Image (tube, rainbow, N blue to C red; front, side, top):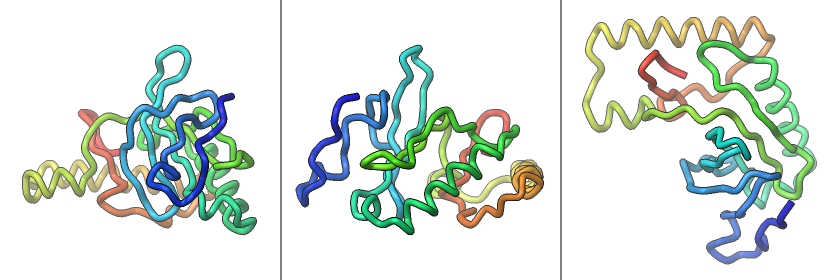
Amino acid sequence: MPPLRDTGADRNAEQPEYAGDYRLQACLGAGGMGVVHLAASASGLRLAVKVVHARYAEDPEFRARFRQEVAAARRVSGAFTAPVVDADPDAVRPWMATLYVPGPTLADQVKRNGPLAPAELRRLTAGLAEALRDIHRAGVVHRDLKPSNVLLTDTGAV
């Protein structure tokens, strides 16, 4: 596995080249705990790889919470969630790879096109209700449900 870049204070510190064996190709977004990158497996499977911010990688409590997040994400697998493909919560920079879901976030869609039409809104809320049902059945509580974390696809929300 190639080493991650130096985690110093420069601009590239949050831009590692690899997470495990996955070469990170482009930044998809960033949040409070990490950056999500587009990557591909050796077979060409497109992945979304969340890499924890360097400042949290040294925090044992944060690592414990990230291990719990990975375990929870692995338990939750359904029509409305992206399955976990691989993860390493013990890496120098902890990371988790899920299948890449192409499509805009709900937040981006509304910013670009305004409010959803009533039929679209009903379909979206029904999908969100089914997703939350499946997540809760797996014993997981989703603590970060917001428009920027809901992906819209041709077949519904993820």
